[in-house]
Image 1 (cartoon, rainbow, N blue to C red):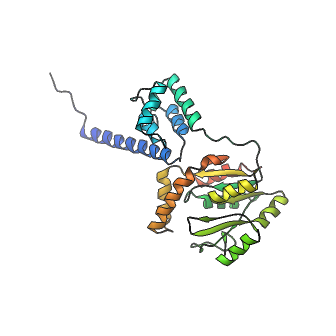
Image 2: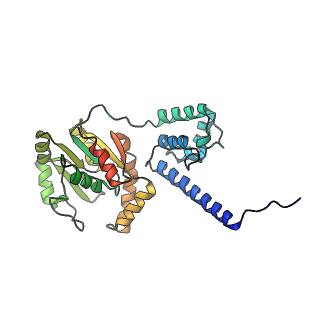
Image 3: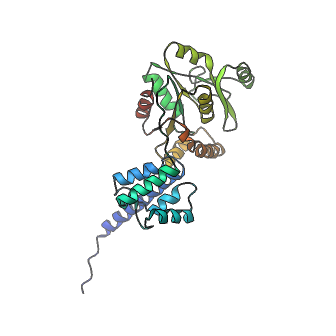
Length: 298
């Protein structure tokens, strides 16, 4: 019998590169689910929309173990309960299996639903290095109808930051006075180091004049605003992927290695809180993310 012809070397090399890229893409998606950058439902939607994509090619076993708190034993019990073979890929699930898996996810890991109605008080929060400040600045520059609140902070200015425009830079004694005299809508200690807070007076004046106000604050502050102003609209800004968030933090070069590690630990905790928010917006491009936030204004 004649030997089967082998593909040219260049074809084998190209196929090998594609296989490596596909594995990396699937690994990236698993990290995104594990870090809660995307929900399991979102990954399943991508798989069903395009079975040939990285999401569609992911085995259901890898998909389930990427979800926090699901180990191999629990995964196997879930697959048995749902009558799904462990060799199945997400894009190859049958209609009954899709519905069963979707129902399981919605019951165990429900996605947040936006509340009815909107408020003229918008709160933008998200994990460290996601680009909250850049998106907020774009809104300030392109949507003059929205007032961007300026926070007070005890940290030192970064290069290019201007007092009164980016932040009110104050010392600890002045921040203590603002807290003691109830002049802050919210305040928090961030990364166990510096304090940030939102002065009340400018916000109350703007809302009283009928303007929309945008607060760009951290998770602790967003929770305080929700408690103080339950009708506020809370928006969580997400990175396109966990790898992109890491790259943004490393790339901006404003923190040393110890601080970067601390911020990444904090980011993992912050990402886990996104279901507390009314809306989630991905910051893949600043202009698009800013437009989506601005569109939520009442």
